[in-house]
Image (cartoon, rainbow, N blue to C red; front, side, top):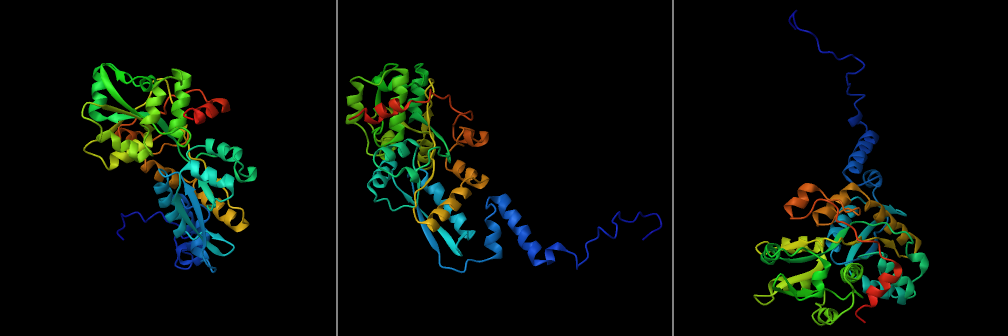
Length: 355
C-alpha cells in the first residue's frame, strides 16, 4: 500500500472470518432460507419444508372452488405443495376441483359433499346451505373473503363505442328495455337462483329500477346455461344485435385473454354495484384433514396469493387493484361505487325471482 492511501475502514471485529461466517452454519442457512421463503409468500410453514422433510405418506385434501377462481387456486395449491406443509408428519397435497356454488351447497345440505374445503362465489351460499340443512358448525358465521370482482355489464368493443356515441350511460335500467339510444340490445344474464352475478343483478334492479315486469320473461327465456356460454354469445349474435350481458369484471378479463382480436368491454353501472367475494370454509370433519385445509387457508392470506389472484383478474376484497394492471386491461383502477348492502329479505327475493 502506498503511504498516501487510506486503509479500508473495517475493524477486526466486523471482518467475517471463515469460522464465524453464518452461511457456513447449517442452522443459520436453514433459517435464512426460511426467512426468504416467508418474504416470497411461503409463510412460517416454509421453515419446516427445508429443515425437516415429511417422513409420512402424503395427506391429500380437496377444495371445491367456484370455476372462475379455480385456475388461480390451482397455481397457489401447486406452490403450497412444493413447500411440504406438514400435518402429523404427512405432507399436505391440495387438489382444487371446479364446482358451482349451488351444487356444493346442495351436496353439503344433503350430506354428500366430498370436498374438505369450499370457496363459493359469495357468502350468500353459506346461508343457502345452512337453510337447506348443512351443519352450522361447518360454515363460518363471519367469513373472510379471498378476492373481489364487481358484477358488471359487458358488451363488445364496437357496441360499446356505439352506445357511448349515442349518449347511453351504463345503467342497470338497460336490462329493462330492449332498446337504448335507438339500438336493439340482446340482453343476457344467468339464473339468479344458481349464479351470484344474476342474484346481484336482481338486487341491483330492485334498488335502482324495479325488479318486476315483462322484461324478466325475456331474460329467463334467453338465459345461457353458464358464464362461458353467455360470454361466447358476445361474438355469435346476429349482426345488428348489440349484446349486453351481466357478468363479473374478472370474467371479462379472462374472456379477453383468449379473444384478443374481439375483446369485450366492461360497463360498470353508474348507480353502483355489488362484488362477489369468494370466501373460504373448512368443511372437513376429520381433525387431520381440517388442520390440512386450515394450513392452506392460512397460505391464502399471503401477499403472493394476492398477487396470483390479481394476475387472474381479481381485485382485493376491498375493491382495490394495481393501477398499471387495471389500465392494461381497460379497467377502472378505483374501487367500484357500492350499492346499498342488501338485506336478507332482498337476497331471498332475488334468489326466488325467476321461480
